[in-house]
Length: 194
Image (cartoon, rainbow, N blue to C red; front, side, top):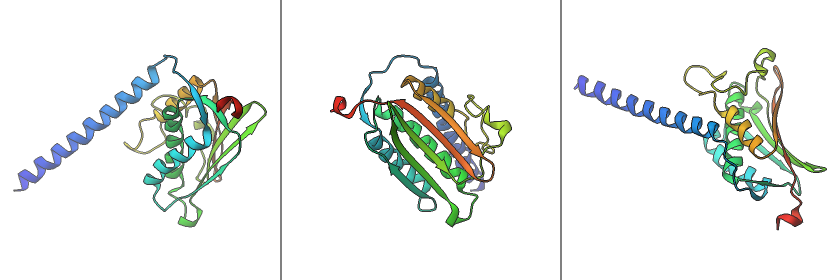
């Protein structure tokens, strides 16, 4: 009976490992693609709200998620790809604040239009990123997560997607205070989008 339980555990571990390898392979394929996507008019707030609903599933009620969404934040893009960025940033932010006291666990997304650019900021009140790590966080396979928690592909893929959309992804972080990722995309006039 003990041998049977051990075999079940081995099979379960093998299945988990295979799933992880499949996910990493899909991420690598996405990172290496350089085809030009067919972009469509999108209200970035709709993308953020959808990504927030998905990310909230992994956050649960232990992290306060605040959306401060501006007006006229139309961009040209692929909803699925942009959503992937926000889900990744939100889940990373939620993981960053988990070591804080429950009442200090917050993540905020802010969108706004400035001139001909649309900005989306994902901020957290986590521990921040050490200055010596800041220059490496967008490198493929670089991760600050312990053990097998991260593949180090999320931020590299997110930056690649933003660049496909003719935008930029940057980060600002202060140790002990938190981190803000800033996505900047070209604006699409709302009238042209409708």
